[in-house]
Image (cartoon, rainbow, N blue to C red; front, side, top):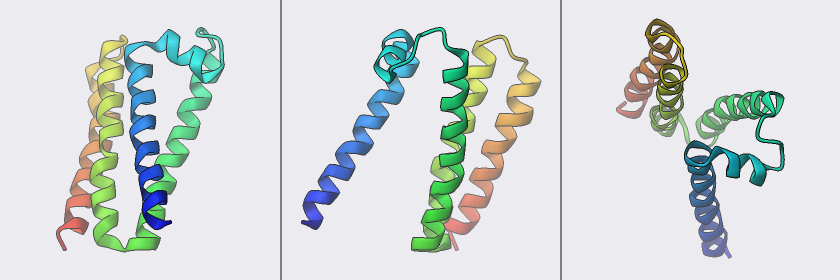
Length: 120
């Protein structure tokens, strides 16, 4: 039963990464698949809000369940999000100062703190 649950969970991880990639590569198809109109700004801001809340909760669960070493690695992995956000800002008319000052600094802090915790 544990192996089956692990396989299903891993499959879910792969599938959600596919869905995320679809939002990047085929946004109209992804929005339709999500179930909202493709021009719904409110839907996109709600998706972002839920993603950010989840991005804060998941590492805390890792800390509670597995300790600071695993928490550090989770923070390093989580740095993918602000790096992607910086790229999004740059590709969509934002300034380099904002991309680096907000999202770049966030990624740097996550990696720095994560590496200290992961390597202790």
